Structures are given as structure tokens and as C-alpha cells.
Image 1: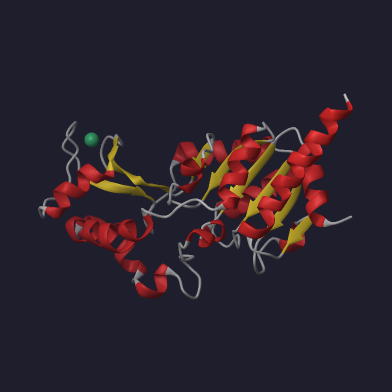
Image 2 (image 1 turned 45 degrees about the horizontal axis):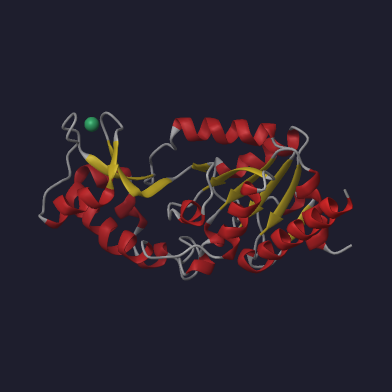
Amino acid sequence: MDLIKQIAEKLIKSSFAVVLTGAGISTGSGIPDFRGPQGIWKVLDPNLFHISHFYSDPLNTWKLFMNEMYEKIKDSKPNRAHYSLARLEELNIIKAVITQNIDNLHEKAGSKNVIELHGNMKYAICTQCYRKYDIENAFNDVKQNKIPICPYCGGILKPDVVFFGEPLPEKEIRQAFDLASKSDLFLVLGSSLSVSPANQLPIIAKSNGAELIIINMGETELDYYADIKVDEKVEEVFPKICKKVEEMIASLSSCN
Ligand code: ZN
């Protein structure tokens, strides 16, 4: 049986399918993989996005973020893999998407239950009271050479993305681990699973009895652990799976 059909069947049979996405789902939208050979970290010094650099020079870190990251990503559009995930959520097959991406493309595609482990670049967050604001307002200050300040408590605002050296957001991590342990089918799309703690999620899922499917161009650190591994581009293979699910559902309902 071909893999597309096999995965589609597993999705339809599942009662709690959870997906983890990484940079590989967004390369099809023109966003370079941060860590890859053409990645952002080959051009930009990652030390400039260390939390200690942010606190030592917030204004310049804001400028770098705005010009070198946000401006290059903000107009990206979701690709067919993002839309397929949103469609499968609409069909109540996928229950949640956990993502390591900050590009907001899952929301743009229409996914509702999205857990963002590394934040979302469309917000600024207060480093004191953790209130969130539209990042465009913060950019207005940055453009006038002012460090964006929380209007509520006066704390310094920071882009709401996880910097190097910074812990992941507690609530999201808790939600992600909870979802992984509840899932009976766990899919990894476009992640090489080299970043902790996200790479522990498939292990938690498997140890609670879930099946693990990995779709990623290239090896991942958990290939040996997967029930099915598809070594192809996510944006090419996942829409086919979604289409197969729709066809199978249609043929099921026509029998009733
Ligand atoms: Zn505040």
C-alpha cells in the first residue's frame, strides 16, 4: 500500500492527531530554514539574538529584528501544506498544531488551535508584565530611535519570539506536552528534531502509545523511532495526503 494512502488511513482512524511543525514547512513559502545551509543564521550572527544582547542593547536588537527578520518574513504566504493542516483541523481530524515557527503562517492559513513554542513575530511582549501588543506599534517607536515601552507598567518591550538563552514560554510548553501525551497519532512535518524540548514531544507521544509519522526532507534525529518516515518536501507530500483523506471520507459517506 502506498504511503500517502497509509498515512491518510491512519489520520482518519485516529481519535487525537497532533502535529508538530518546524522550519521545513515554511521553506515552501520562501522562508529560509534558520539553521540550514541558506539559513538566516548563516547571514546573521545568532549572538545578536541572544537575550543578553537584547538587554545590553535593546534598541539595536529591535532594529535588527525589524529589518533583518520581520521585514523579510512578514509578506510570506502560507503554502499548500499550511492550508492542508487547516483543512484537516476543520474536518476535526487534526486536533492541534504545535509549531517551532514564528512566521504566523498557520494562522494565516486558518488553523485555529496553534501552540507556538517560539512565539509569534506579530507581537511585542512586555518583559515585566508579559502583556502583548501589536508589533507594528513597537516598530513606530524603534523607527524614532526609541526603545518600545509597555504603556501599562513601563517595562521594556521585546519581540514576542524566543531569543537564544531564553526559556520557552511555560504555558505553551505545558500545552504541547499535554497534547503529545494525549495523542494517538503524532505527525512531525518539516523538522529535523534537533532542538530540545520540541524533539521530546514525539518521544512522549510514542511512550503513551501514539504512532509517529515523520515527513521531512532529510534525516531527523528520531527517524529510527518513526512508524513511517517520508523523506520528501512537506509542501509536496502533505497536500496529497490531505486530498486522499477527503476522498476517503467522501467515499465512506456515499456508502451510508
Ligand atoms: Zn508591562
